[in-house]
Length: 277
Figure 1 (tube, rainbow, N blue to C red):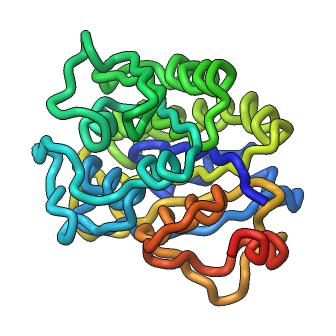
Figure 2: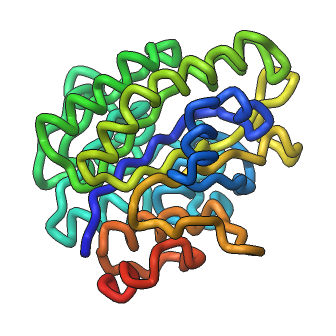
């Protein structure tokens, strides 16, 4: 069995403010999802961690070591793996994602809307303003899902990160932006699950009280991870810890595509894993 997958990468969502996500935790409390935390790779910066999550390669090995490294990735991403297996890919995401896996440098007039079967991200809606509303971005993703029926869809909103940079970790604006994201997901997650998608919700990095991130503080590195869908085990296995570098393998295993990424821990039902392997 091969599943369709949606990954929601909520930029800049520290685990410290994940308590604001009442709907997501309500799903977990009802036995309809899993939750844990993981540590972001270093440096805890956006572009390096997009690469880490989507390729399984940490920044010190990928060469994408700060946000100013503007070039195509030199590693196979989940988009490459999915396309090579004949699957359809899509992303509603910040333009750095397009620049990592489709074309670099990114040109808004050419790349804002992308529809090209030959590219790793075949269908895309990309934005470049950090204040682009999360509500609009999620609808960009939902439009891609309804129009192109992707097997793998990345949805990457920036509003939480933007609020953190403007107001800091310990601010009502940052927490309330997380609450708004939770409400937006409450509208969409049931639809995605009803359509048979497996849904991974996480973040690239957290936020500190200096209105920034990049270092080793727990509030910068510790991020939440939620898993929803019938392919996952019913409870988080005792003692199991997942690394950010293992998320790419988890996505690939859900899609049922071959890969050589750092193996994910046993989070999928045994029957599903037998069918995949």
